[in-house]
Image (tube, rainbow, N blue to C red; front, side, top):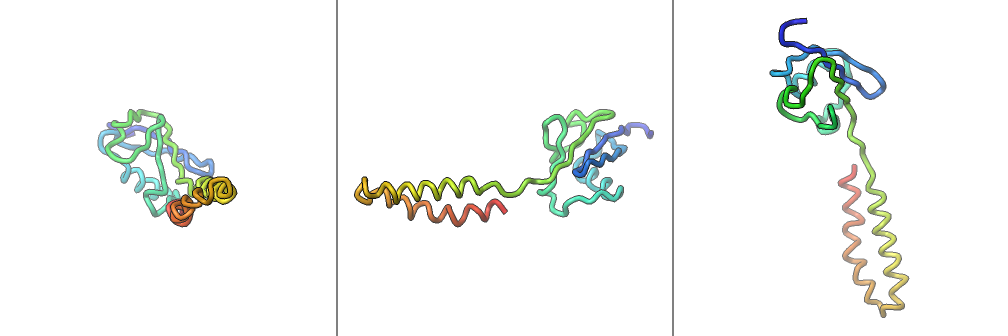
Amino acid sequence: LESGLINVFFQIPGHKTVCLQLNPNKDGYRAIRNQLMEHDVELSQDMFDMFMTVNGKIICSGVLADYCITEGTTVHISKRARGGCFMISFSIIIIMFLAVVGSCCTCGASLIVIPLLLPFLFVLPLFCL
């Protein structure tokens, strides 16, 4: 082990763990990413699809020392979870349904919310891809 280098373990999706020797005062996100690729670890090409977390903090910039990474620390790598907007879309549909059902009690006044909710119903799924 060279002077100043520490062993850091990276737990990768698929239950694989890789040990890298890193300099906590010099190495950061890009250096880690490059070393993982040298070890034939398949990572997403899009940097926003991959998160490295340690002690509940996301590693995004700076050096390892900024995140209190010491000898033997395990860094967890995870992929971004996609989707999840179905609940919001479902809620909008329920509100629209209730507005239609309630329109007989409100003399149609509740129908005014439908044109306001329709754009959200079609645009929200685009942000969850």
